[in-house]
Length: 535
Image 1: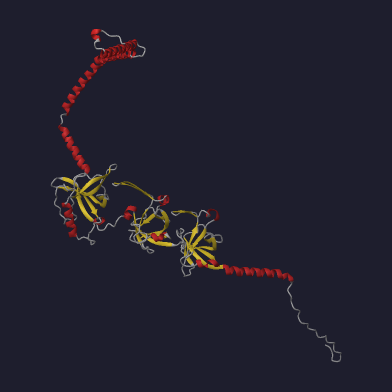
Image 2 (image 1 turned 180 degrees about the horizontal axis):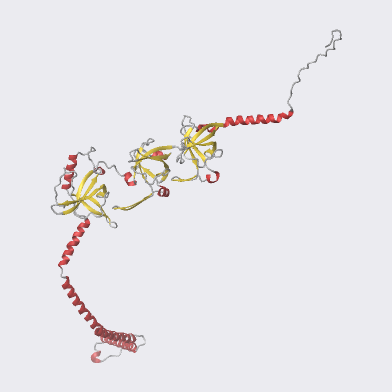
């Protein structure tokens, strides 16, 4: 330990504190800093370009791959599939899509999404370009104001885009026939729309089909427009003959629907969207006049009804008034015979009666009118509509010479008297002729004819043996005479020369006789005194 007398040690000098030097980055950091700023700008740009993320549910993920599958609208990429998961209930797949900023308008609740892949449907073949490029998700933008982030994808592409102008109508049909989604709609054989969808009604008795008609053709759909099946080839062979109706080749192959106004009045008010129309089976059924209330009648034909079928027409002088509803066979105990009984439905409203009261007739008025018509000779008759098939139809007409009958108009339904058909009358006439032929002694006539034939054979044999040789000789002699006559008539024949000399002498004699006659006229005394010489 140092003592107090020892000199104190020299204290070190106070250190001088210098202010810290200002730090300056090295120039080498400039490049990474610029790169970081560029990356940050890219991130900000990417965030600004990113649109809403939505989820679309599909039945399967066929053709969809996360990070590869694009979302396109009119072949323009508007988003990408980022994630692909199985739904919690494992019935569907969840497809997460990130839309671009410019496509955020597609995230509304009525937008539709579907997978575009090669497909063949009623509207044609589509998606062939995806064979090389791969499947993608198509979208049809909605017009709703409500935003949505979850959608149920369509299994088939929509037939009509939501931005296509036109109107949709509802067709009510008993069955769908050969129609399908995408089947064309025709107006005067021009394709003007498509069938968008169809649904069976809960009662199972009818179908509702959604038909879209494009503008400006939709203005031809009025309240009185009729729709009918125009599918395939409508070939009908019935009592009216052979009928063939077709539309375009596409309709023949894929089916279709056509529409038309019965009176052709296109100036009628246009039908409102979603108006319901009945879809008729064919063109004739669609355009025929409304049937009105059916009036049943019973017909008893005392002849065969082979060739008459249910649905066969009931005709009145060319106008179809109804059809056959039922054909039965009734047993008559009095005659112990069976009689065909035909029930028909007649629609009197199909007759446009001039001056008739527009009010519907009462039952009593109809009965009185039927009695009056029967009194005037109204009868039913079976006629042949097709000689090839033998199809029959029921014809109503007036037969003034028909025997009078007593009609019970109060019967339910009334029984209209009948007359035999045209072939039935012909059959009766043929039977009458056959009965007359039975009375002809055909055996005796045959025996006489046989004897006559034998005699004729004998005469023929005699002619061959006797007459023909004589005739042949006569012909030979006649030919020889003709040859001699021809030779005698030749120009250098002696007969011709003798004849010419004889004619020449006759001419000279005639001249001498003429001179003698002239001399006697001048000198008649020369007969007694002789001819004087002329001075």
